[in-house]
Length: 477
Ligand SMILES: [Zn+2]
Image (cartoon, rainbow, N blue to C red; front, side, top):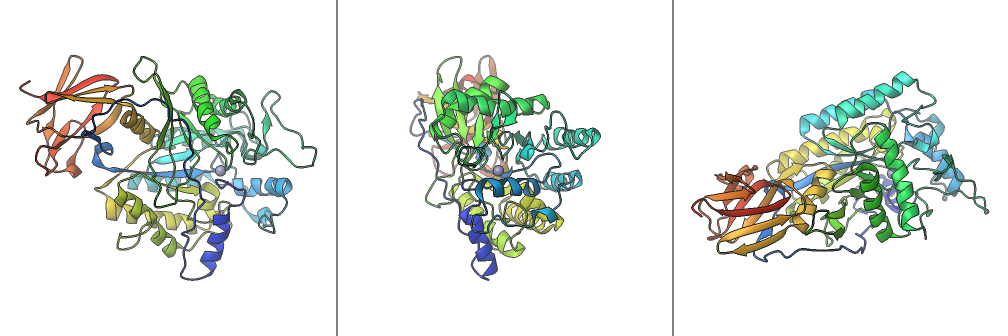
């Protein structure tokens, strides 16, 4: 379900925009990054710049409201209606006529296309989807064999290129995590909904306990997991508390080294789409910790989240990346050199089997790769989170033509622009010494290489940085 309000203003406007020819989908859910305590930061020599991984702009595709088999459009709608009334007719939809299932054949078709194109990202797995059944026990309406096959598809086929996130427990009713039953109606007859204000005023332990319960359900499925997605407004009541709860829950339940979460959509061109490394602590010691908040740069351009109104294909591709690659939200963000994560909702992608939104997505990806192939790098959110934790939290010192790095976390493809003209740079970590190979341009960077910047006295180096102290020096040192 849409980030923010139950039925977002953006989706409403999107319909209006789609209906009126010409204007297209530039409205967005206004979700600026929260003001949260970032915690510690190390000293970093001001003339050393940490660049993007491998010198390329990270790109990622974020899928909300997916799960096994259950079409969340069909099953959430009546529960949202009951909780919120019809919202001036906006929830009055023929959900009974929509398919109850999004078949695994579609997951496979989608996943195969993404593999061919190199697409990576995040795929939600709501563990007790709309209270239909428990993915780790039984799913009424489907056989045990079907559920197992569906989970196996996610485990064997999807996890290599997709992070798996719980999107809380049900995405509809709030659960009493002591009894495993939905909370009863409130006195005014309304319901506690996960995306509707339950977290307001709750303690850190309560929020972390709830998130931890959802994470445990994913862990029960033997799926790798290092983060979560908030259903819409979950966490709006205390954004800093949510961030701290993320560390407590993800480290506590999963033991992940670098927890991350997805909640925010940054659509204002003036705002940065860089991930925010929050609540960093102990970065100079043996037990560093932080959480990385990774935003998207688009709301859902593909259509209404529930699958009922996919947006027109050509205009929607254009709103991501224009045919001349000069405009469109993704092109603009990539040109700024900032991560371009874009978003959809799984029922919207399936669009009740019409194939419209999937075609739009395919067109968008092909155009993105055609225009920017040598400037972008498809990454999972966990990979982006890891890189940003290293980028923000590595101490960087420059002395006598050497650069010394102290990294609380390692990451592949660490890329630095150095203000020293080292002829043949060597990376030294403990007893291991690696001489970097020279390549002709930034586009050819890979781990273990360096290149000239074109500016006298500055070079770019790229290598897999390990936790601990690393020195960059010339081969003759
Ligand atoms: Zn959602």
